[in-house]
Amino acid sequence: MVSLPYPPRSLYYDGKPQSANSGKSFQNIDPSTSLPLAEIHSASHADVDAAVASATKAFPSWSQTPAIQRSRILLKAASLLRERNDELAAVETKDTGKAFSETSAVDVVTGADVLEYFANLVGGGGLNGETIQLRPDAWAYTKKEALGVCVGIGAWNYPIQIALWKSAPCLAAGNCMIYKASEFTPLHSTLLAEIYTAAGVPPGVFNVVQGGGDVGAYLTSHPGVAKVSFTGQVSTGAKVAASAAGGMKYVTMELGGKSACVVLPDADIEQAVDGAMMANFYSSGQVCTNGTRVFVHESMKAKFEEVLLQKMQFIRPGDLMDANTNFGPLVSKPHYEKVLSYMKHGIEEDKATLLYGGPGKPEWLASANSEVKNGFWVQPTVFTDCKDSMRIVKEEIFGPVMSILPYKTVEEVVERANNTTLGLAAGVFTKDLNLAHKVIAQLQAGITWVNTWGESPAEMSVGGWKLSGVGVENGRRGIEAWVRNKSTLVEMSGEVPTVFAKL
Ligand code: NDP
Image (cartoon, rainbow, N blue to C red; front, side):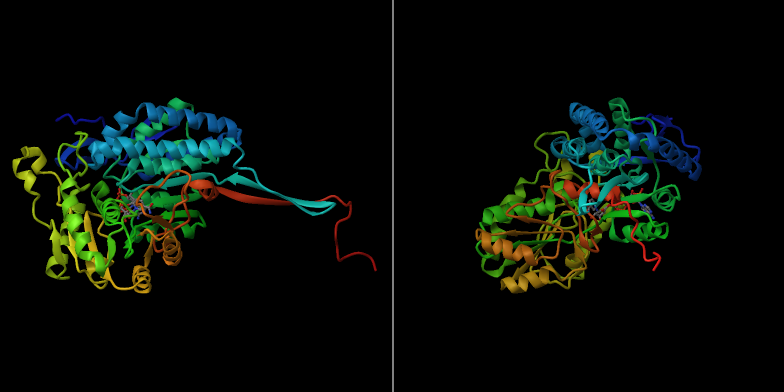
């Protein structure tokens, strides 16, 4: 048997790795070469049941552990993550195909930030409720209580970050979690579980199951589960939400987008181009908040395109561990084929003007070694003179494909930016800050930026509007998604108000 670069991945519950009894396994693939990385053992229904049972057993004690003590344990996990940043980032680079310059600076760091944020929040009294004095002899108080066993299901683009953005508030609030990574990027899952265990998270509090959509579907309909937090496509999210609603489970949905990046007429062109490039080519375009509809005022379109074409040369594909590489392959073969088909559709059916790139093989691959030639590499691509009705403008491609859309007036651009069923993110570039706030106020999106793109710090609550999601992650509001409210009214007058008194 050929040995693979990473040890097999299986389940993790009761505080240790567990073997799966499904008899089914698959291999995950290095996107930069299409070579296998590890054998992944899928969970059977009985395996999932065992993980849920482990979490159910752990819940009473973990939820009753003082918040300050939970906080200390989670802070220790955050510090272990930071100590092991480069090792974990290298695993993420292998699994996702994202350059190490990205994964080492963003993926683990922003996950650890969120863990630290929620640990500090609950340690500092963030789970306290309110007291409401109703009259001198009556008052009400509220408490925030943990939900129970929660499920986290992640997408493949930011695997360890997504796992942490879900598990951090979940565990901080006193819940237990069953986490399922995407089958395309499962390597981080058990490493994170080991780190939680090493930090002192008790057995059963954070658990992992492996597998595809069928395992996710079984989890979301499981009667032992109180909440599902899902990150993925709108179409999958709709199925997951429907299944969870059947059991009256709480849900958080972080779904796809087709966000508008609005370059207002007075914008600094250099800044606007930098922002638009970050909004389209970071992580090779595989970012949910990408601003793929780039609205550029007609008066500046020629200059914008000129500067953009100059800067496109700064996109550097290549050896993913080289500190100068900033552009990797797409995550998987099916995704590669999907993105290429959109590029072809843009040219052949939408008849958009191809300004840069396109569906052809990247030129640099000709001199690359034979393994890299088999990776899922595409060219960063720009279409211009696009129309709102084009498929490449309407649908989420989730690849490095920018569409430039000229416009004439601010009223027009606001209306066109909002003309979509999605509402994840939006941003404006302008020197006029009054105008920036007026335009932002009218854009229908949950995550918005002024003169920048993409930063999503732990302190900032983020979530989509319209079909892009339900609820938020991160920030003070992020913890609310992992607790339920209990209100208690206390009467101290010595008399029970009643209409059934003797006349
Ligand atoms: P998918 O919807 O295909 O998959 C997401 C997860 O759901 C995977 O773990 C998948 O498993 C699992 N899954 C598939 N079918 C089911 C089911 N019936 N029930 C339960 N779980 C299921 O999304 P992608 O992985 O392709 O991720 C890309 C999408 O994620 C994009 O649309 C992107 O915009 C969105 N996204 C949104 C973010 C946000 O914060 N709003 C952040 C990041 C990404 P498997 O992969 O093993 O099939």
